[in-house]
Image 1 (cartoon, rainbow, N blue to C red):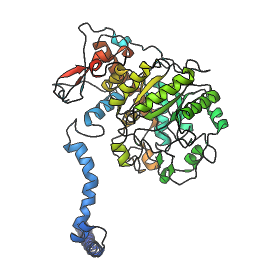
Image 2: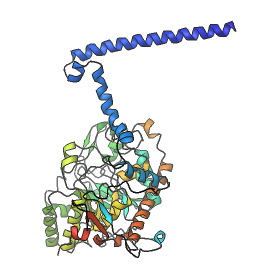
Image 3: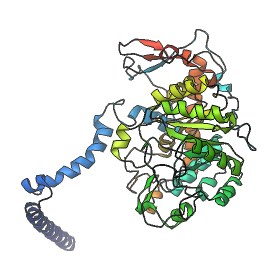
Image 4: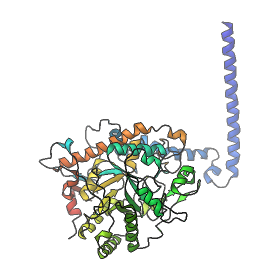
Length: 496
């Protein structure tokens, strides 16, 4: 008994000693921080309130997460609120997606979309199978996807290898395409053997010469891959219209540098436009060049700025002939994206899709080019209602990046540009990537795609049509500033 008591007494003495040592170290640390804070001149708060002022930075960092999980209402957060994210999480996990006791959505807010249900809704919604839509019918190798919902451009480099692998395998399971983003074609894009849309950014990563020009042999080699179905020439993107892609040097490892054709460890910053494209004629020349080399549908991606540019582009196409037109246009919304971007561009430049998509559809329809040029809508559309709205406006396809990131487990930590993503999606830190299992997450990607299209089908059948692509502007209404709604056909009347 005395032995146990002696042992416990020794342990207690050690614990007291350690506690006293910790107090002494803490006291010394406080004194050192106090002296540093009083002597430094860069931070006013720390100089006026030494030591205590340091907590400001901690609270500022944690506040973003506390607001997200404890204080913000389900429909308040930006860029995506809790209600949107929760639906994606439940769909990806094949969990219950029903709600009870009424909607938490404000149905009187200006701009709110409401679908107009039919008195005689279409039945057999589980059996809906959309008809294939052909892109580039006159190309040597046209592409006819059945799905209308696909994975938008996310580069390997911005995304981790395990995330790209999971998306690739998920896209194969879902039967949708996957856009490479501007970072080139990596082995991880090909692991799932899904359909690939290769994006040619302004730096031409993956198909560039040492000086940054288009390398035709590299382009021809990529076109020879059976999984690559289309080529997308990116003019601008929603996160930073008017500026090229930004990949911090901390993410540019040896593999990424080799795939992109750039120096390792240096910031990868693309030009703000293709140097060889200075006007509409040169744009159409570049499209023709890529289409001729690849034999596959070739389109363009941009954020709409001045709407009159579309009129000028259409006029150039009509002058040169409809064969010169891009096979598709991916219209991005100017309200952000997955990558890093300067805040002035993210917040203030470009038109949102809610304004630009009706304009583009109507301008192409008025010129008789709507069937020639397929429209791919991109930008913050992660739920069935978002996709149904775009189809009703006139889009042929819808793509999403962040929706599929949520299906992988993204928690909107807002650290995509810092290599510290806690879910392993946008980081090249191996310890953080370990938590993302491509085998499990690929199934979640496919589940999300499946239930999103199922949700769009539900809306379409409720509106009385059998195929979501039969939705039109008469099937939806928009709430005005008075709190009442008007038909989208009245809000956006087709051009004569």
